[in-house]
Image (cartoon, rainbow, N blue to C red; front, side, top):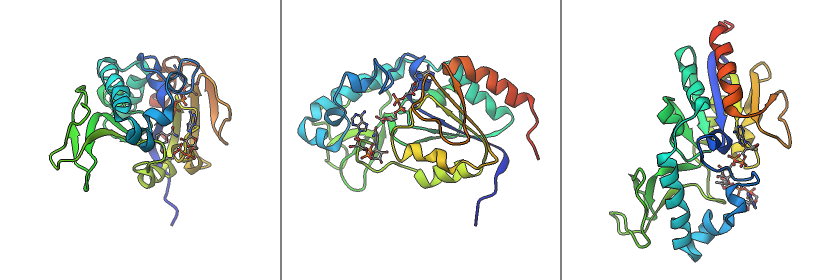
Length: 236
Ligand code: NAD
Ligand code: APR
């Protein structure tokens, strides 16, 4: 049964470009993390097995930086939508800037820096905020503690729930992502034909079908877009 579109529902799909203006690096821009680090060394199970100390250092540094970063005007604009809409934020980001800006429904597809988890079964999850994870640090079950991040090659979380939200949204806003990582990028394919679809990014190799592309910074475009959406009554 096809899920009906909910006229008052907005889904936001965000990526690292949204947090760029909060001082957190993206991945594939010229100064992106994958130009400074080898992603398979610091963000993959193979890298974890080979040199766990390099993986822990990579995430300990990012966790501290993310902890001290502040949400920007684009995060705030997304949170402001909740005054008049049912908003679900689906993010590839591992920082907590959406939550700290006031968004109340945030799905993290690639995990969260503020959490660690055990490598035993079942995985135990711990909130660690900005605390580093030490090499050899063990969880209660005696297994090694690791960042609660989805690495390359690992299963992305919450995809079924995320697809269902996109498929029932009247408006879909994609912001700050190159849409180069699957399955997260495939979420744009679940957007309804009749839904209003907007993509905000500095640059994009390919614009998904039906999306209006607004080139530029998230903080330049989102406040005006949100003001317009809040001013216009949702179609019944
Ligand atoms: P994939 O295996 O289809 O990606 C193709 C290959 O390209 C993979 O080996 C991937 O690691 C590699 N790749 C991705 N970005 C790269 C880059 N910047 N430079 C060089 N190689 C790069 O799919 P995937 O991307 O590996 O994702 C598989 C699973 O890993 C999915 O569940 C995904 O959500 C998860 N994941 C992927 C990424 C990512 O950036 N690819 C990040 C976190 C989690
Ligand atoms: N405003 C809007 N867009 C921006 C800004 C900005 N200020 N700065 C950069 N961008 C855009 C870039 O043009 C690019 O399209 O954000 C996008 C960032 O793309 P990536 O660096 O590929 O980051 P992202 O799409 O989040 O990567 C997805 O890859 O390695 C994995 O797990 C990692 O979740 C991440 C995933």
